[in-house]
Amino acid sequence: PLPGEIVVDKWTFGAFASTDLETQLRRRGVRRILLAGILTNVCIMATAVQAVDRFFRVCLVEDACGAFDARWHQHAVELINGPQTLKENHHGSVGLYFGEVAKLSDVETALAKCGGGAAV
Image (cartoon, rainbow, N blue to C red; front, side, top):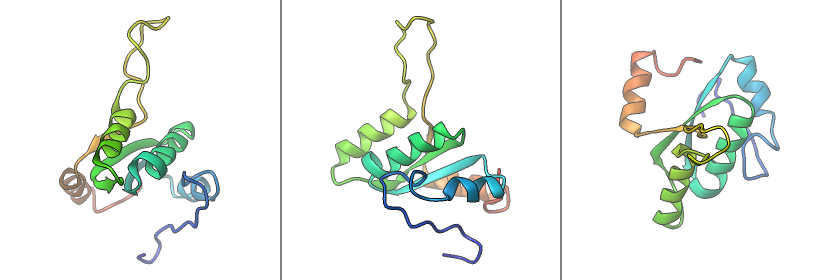
């Protein structure tokens, strides 16, 4: 890690449940997080759900994640970015999702425009 980067030692699937990650992010004014790593369908998915529960905006860097099976990875991507409600629900809302999905090249371009990784 680079100097000043947050490092947490987690022992649960999600990065928030067993660490002080939320406190560290809030202290820095972070509102949006980029998710990358392994396993998309386990640790990344759990972290995405935990982040949304804590009102962080989530962006999954799709091609910077992986799973033991490509189908598991793709299913997790769809769950993170897909509507979590049916059109037939009681109030007709659509579009509730855990996060957005981006390619690494697009993330790199966006970060370069804002100075590399400032808290946003």
